[in-house]
Image 1 (tube, protein in one colour):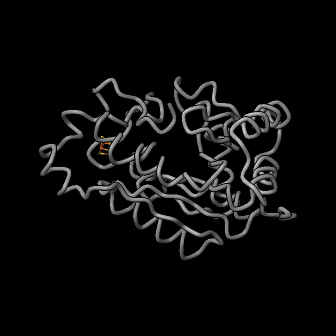
Image 2 (cartoon, helix red, strand yellow):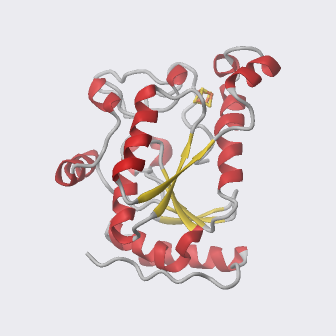
Amino acid sequence: MSTAHITEQRSPRSPEELRSLAEQAGRDLEEADALDVLRWAAETFGHRFCVTSSMEDAVVAHLASRVFPGVRVVFLDTGYHFPETIGTRDAVEAVMDVEVITLTPRQTVAEQDAEYGPRLHDRDPDLCCALRKVQPLEEGLRGYDAWATGLRREESPTRANTPVVGWDEKRQKVKVSPIARWSQQDVDDYIAEHGVLTNPLLSDGYASIGCAPCTRRVLAGEDARAGRWAGSGKTECGLHL
Ligand code: SF4
């Protein structure tokens, strides 16, 4: 396994340059192996590239660390996570060759409750996600030109067209989804082969893990994200829209 040759950029790239890079790589890397996609991102962006992880599992962080030891892994601590998710984050930091960066919202849960009333997630989950996920990620990604996600096309209809490399128009960044084409079986096989850390809740009936108040176990026959904001009509938190 060869690691990426990292060279740091001397001057920032313009949004036009980044968009053009994303469009070209989107065409060139559509069929590429996940490691080759991540190697391209590391060599193209150096430390202006990071991986984001919900700590459902550490598959993309693990893949990235193989080609880019010390890669930054950004985790959003909304204040509403299951203890198992925080434990997975801590374990990833302890055992993997990555630098975990934890982002937090501007307000604690108590401060948010004081301003908006308790259980905003029940009354206005879009606002709650905007305050606790979208805004902190936007601020946390300011120093990066490219970010990687663990999005997969088969996870849900809203993710069916996820490009392997695409242009994140909203944030004016290159968005890399190296396992977009992977099936759940591919993920399971990779975890088993490499002993990758996973959130213990995955073996307790949860298929997609977000904040505790908005996540339930999935039922037989449901898609992996059916347990997120169940019954509300909401399917995405806004990070990937
Ligand atoms: S997933 Fe739920 S608790 Fe978490 S930020 Fe969104 S609405 Fe709030």
